[in-house]
Amino acid sequence: MPMFTIVGGVNGNGFRVVAFYRNGELLPATDTPPAWLVQLRQELG
Image 1 (cartoon, one colour):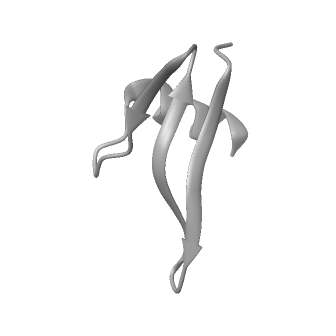
Image 2 (cartoon, rainbow, N blue to C red):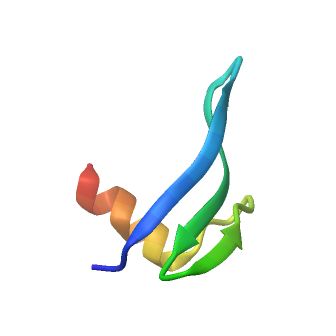
């Protein structure tokens, strides 16, 4: 399981993710999330 941090803020629509930090790598959040994030969301339910 990779170490990760979700960096973001809250707007009128709720939580808005602006970037992901994983294994020392900062990844910008895009409209298409990376496969590992999709899998993580599925695992978390």
